[in-house]
Amino acid sequence: MKTDSLPIWVWLLVFLALFTQGLFMFLDARRRGRRAWLWGLWGLMNFPLPVVVYSIAVIWLDRRRGRSSGDK
Image (tube, rainbow, N blue to C red; front, side):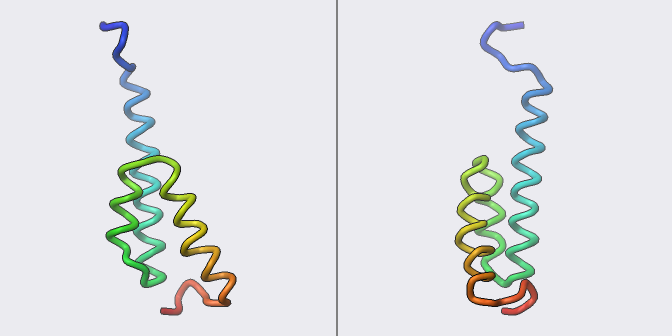
């Protein structure tokens, strides 16, 4: 084993975090009618910045405007 390689469990943890984040963002954005593919793909690329930006740009602003999650 190389000294600079990561154990397999670290790679699985990274994959699980990215996949879960991307899936959450995709499903929530689709329910809100907010460019689901854009948010889902961006959620698969980085962690945790996309979910922070999504929380501010979509969820917080929808709540502030008084829109429910089912409204479009």
